[in-house]
Structure formats: structure tokens, C-alpha cells
Length: 249
Ligand code: NAP
Image (cartoon, rainbow, N blue to C red; front, side, top):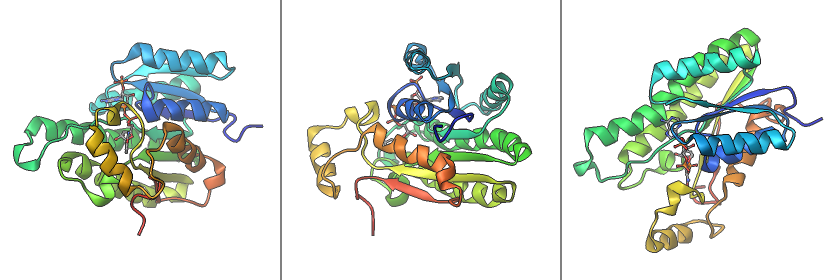
């Protein structure tokens, strides 16, 4: 028996990158998976087809997590479709980088709305279901940038630091009902988000990483699957860095 057999998992931003790897991994571990996406229907459907043809169960649902009503509707649809909601992975995220002095209100708000308010709205809706079930695991995908900050990423760092505070607060609120809330903080991971980095930035980043390489989406997915599983049943409120040793002190 696989460790997530019988579980229902919702992964926001599951169509590409880290989210897609998380969907594959949770499905391989036995969970039924809802692959949420914003606009890339064909990518989401490809992940769903891959999981279903390997003998798993997955469906895709479009929802923009920066819209709090859409978040509530998404969670309700999952619960209706599958009858329960055991695992939520708040992974959807965007970057709109720029130095603070030149950052537009729109770039600030887009990142806060998607990367922080979206996590709040999904968690609020999922918590109601998990509290009734008296079980559940929420894993938030934050970033090492939320721990250490980064020039040119004030909006992203604020949102990701906010997710860490939200993770700890939700863990304290929900633990008495057997709902665990944790976070993973990836460092530099090979996805569309980091594909745009110049060779110079890439080399400088690699020199700061103890393991001297970028991580893979699978590296993050393995940590998420662990925190979502009963192997982590005594772990809540934690943020696990998956960063090749970039930020440890
Ligand atoms: P990515 O390759 O750019 O994929 C982003 C995913 O999020 C896509 O599935 C996208 O859906 C979805 N998404 C974006 N905006 C959304 C919205 N408003 N509503 C619903 N879904 C939305 O990103 P990634 O690199 O895999 O990053 C995934 C998470 O890891 C993010 O939270 C990111 O901040 C975090 N992270 C990444 C790194 C890294 O090095 N890559 C490091 C630290 C943390 P569509 O396909 O429909 O556009």
C-alpha cells in the first residue's frame, strides 16, 4: 500500500514546474490529485493524462488563486467531486521583479494577491473541511527569499515571508483538530521561473549553494510528499528549506 492511498490532494499551480512534479509525486504515492492551473489548460491536462494513464486518478480545475472567491469555489468543487480533502499544497506563485524605488503598485499587488492572499483564501476554505474531518495536511510553497530577502524582489520576499507567518499561525489554530500546516522553502530550482536568469546570475547563485547546483522540481516534491504524509504526523508549523544548503546557519 502506498503511503497516500485514499487521500485527496489539491495542488495549486500544478500545471508546470514544481507544482507539476508535486502532482506526479503525490499521485505516485497513491493520492487522487486535483491539478489547479491559471491559464495553461493544455499543460494541466497533460499532467492529468500522464497520471491517469499510469493508473492514478487526477482531474484539472482552472482557478485564479489571486481571486479569493475563485479559491473558495475551487476548494468546494474538490470536496464535492471527491467527497473529502486531505492534502492541500499551496504552490501557485509568480514573480514580478523590480527595485523598490521603481516598483509599480500593479507589480506589488499582483505578487501579494497571488503568492500570499491566495494561500490565505485556499487555507481558509480548506480548513473548514479539514476541521470537520478532524484531519488534514497543508503544505505551503514559500521560498528562501522569504527567509533572507533579495534585492529586486521586495514584493516576492514580502509575500513569501508572509506565507511563513501564515503557516505558523494556521498550524497553531488548527493543530487541536489534527490539521497540520507546514511549508517548504525552495532555493534555486530548475523551472520556467529560473530559466530567464542570465548566465552571470546563475553562476553567482551556484557559488552560494553548498551543493553547487540548482535543485530539481522533484527535490521539492519529495519534501512536500513527506510533509503531507503520516511520516510527518508529529511535524507542524515548520518551514523546511530545500535549497542545497544555500541558507543554513
Ligand atoms: P512556474 O514554473 O512559473 O509555474 C507556476 C505555476 O503556478 C503554473 O502552474 C501556473 O499556472 C501557476 N499559477 C501562476 N499564477 C497562478 C494563479 N493566479 N492562479 C493559479 N495558478 C497560478 O513556477 P515554479 O518555479 O514551479 O514555482 C512554483 C512555486 O515555487 C511558486 O510559489 C514559486 O514562488 C516557488 N519557488 C520557486 C523557486 C524556483 O527556483 N523555481 C524557488 C523558490 C520558490 P499556468 O501554467 O496556468 O500559468
